Length: 418
Ligand code: AMP
Image 1 (cartoon, protein in one colour):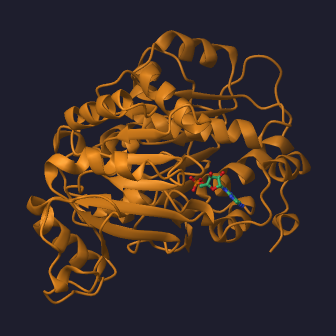
Image 2 (tube, protein in one colour):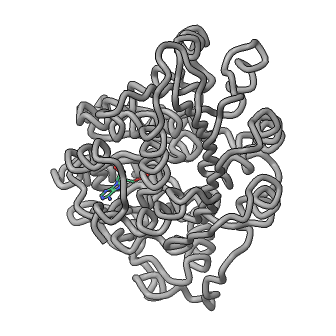
Image 3 (cartoon, rainbow, N blue to C red):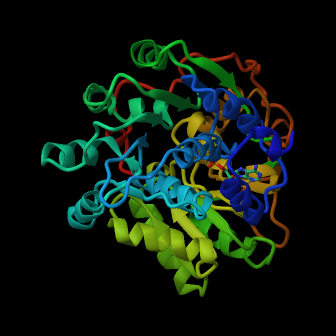
């Protein structure tokens, strides 16, 4: 399928050409025609599949076909997203794709001053990207007129529920006009999402693209078993290879992330840090530096890294294994995005062997073990059963899951100090 078949308006086709995209991704091919035809839609797709454009292009096209009122105007499209980073990223994408259109995009999220966001709302916005909490705050203060919304997107809906946003979403949806088109995107269709779709969508069409219970096929994964006190030394050893030019390293806690970043900096590796103790401007700067190549390594914790989309990440390093297997899949999905080839390397200390086996059972296969050439891992050689074969215990095949284990009722933010 070519972009021409998608019947998008020509300013968007021009922006797509400038972005260098040659063909639509599967979610774009599947979702754009029903959205343009005016249907509500449930899109089951992960970040990294091109789903932002799948809703952004048709919404921009539809808005461009209507006369834009001059001066101050109320938003006609609302996109709800779970995290500030994702909201900022969606806004950036909308600005890129809509750069030849006279449409205004604003984003509102917590952790930064309200004033500039209020000013943006006051001066008039066509498309509003928002995190639910701050949107309700500002709306409660009389800003953010929602009476003209005709297009609503719930992006990463599963994650919004996971983070405890359901009451806020319900409140927001009650404030919107009934006559609207609603699009819901989620990585999986869990029972809670089904309830939400029954409540708020009308005869929706469904599209489902590449459920990624399995990590992206373009990502090569392996494990380095290493003594815990040698993890930093091993990372520095690997960083001697210039192929690791854009490295996202995950640490278990904020404290470990800070310590690792300090050690890397001390060894002359330009490093940025992303975790929830950092201010919003520090987080934005970290992402900007990493994207621009001013930082070679971005050290992050799981929550802070949710949904971040950075092109060209060469390697994901699990400096510590994540607490649950879904986070592993999520982490390594940061590389190998949009068909790029990437590597995902996990450092596993002897204490982490148990979690590693659980992870392998979840994935339904073993992750190959490697030893870094010229580096003393300070461990006995791996047992034969660990040497890249399937784990010794029987492997449970991946079942199509309705509700992954990590989606417990408890909001993630309370779960660990990341
Ligand atoms: P998303 O799933 O929206 O986070 O998008 C993942 C990445 O794919 C983003 O970096 C987009 O710029 C990129 N992308 C979106 N659509 C296309 C396309 N048709 N061809 C190539 N890359 C794309």
